[in-house]
Image (cartoon, rainbow, N blue to C red; front, side):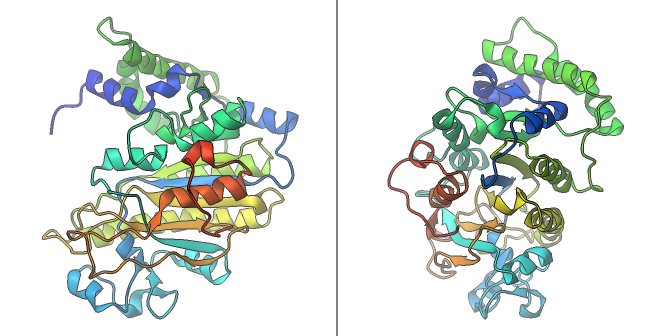
Length: 397
């Protein structure tokens, strides 16, 4: 593996986030967000979208499991789940046994599963595929994300979209406006571990390009902000679950009526080329143990009742297991949409496990149609600036 130097890291950071930094990305502190909640609270009835990105390419076939299909068991004899181990949704499909809370949400009618989601001519590269999902532009690379374009078309307040974490994802970057970045509290141990790294990344260097200098400056700003607000209380994290810690911050912001319509959180580690079963099941349990109490809390809150959670990954995996008891990069996978406003059930056709495209599932739904419903019904916006024309509603909300 090539050595990761300061310059290569800054170049990579510049590629995914520098546009946002240069076009006015705002770092927001927890006290500032709470001040906004007091001064201009979220209006009653305003929908809120919580976007959960699962980085690495989650294996959708072992998430939404076609347990009754012999082709599933034939393609991955040691990786497949037995029918008795699956949380049944109907007589053909079930959820991974780690997703007990989402199974309950399905029974309550507040979980929609969109099947076979991808885009035309899927790309097997993590970076390009995630770029496509976040920019909503499968045909050509663009410099703005779908949430960024929504921000551009609806106002100039960056607090309308908040990323939990200091580095903005591409979806959050607009041409005129970017989302705000909120860094949750870090522990003393993690701060100590990364202090020297951040120090090195933030040091100015005459050899840096303008874009790299901007990224480096952002690290200096982050250092200063962390020191300035270190004495202030923030929402506490829950155990060792990184997604739960992020969603705790989101839940406290929503219940405090922060004027934010979109929150972005993430969980990584889904690139399961080897020993997939145990790794993926632990990650899905992390997802479930974070989402379940969050959704339960939202269902009882005046603002939370209008929350919709969208969980997606950049691609699914190939149907056949590889020689390392893992799976390789594929195409289509399921997207989960949950919350009180959601019309539960399956949406779109289940991809065939035998009618394949060179070993890959053939997509049956376009991800931009999922975004269409979120933009139209949750955010109450014209979806065209964000996802283009010609999209359609799936009837999720």
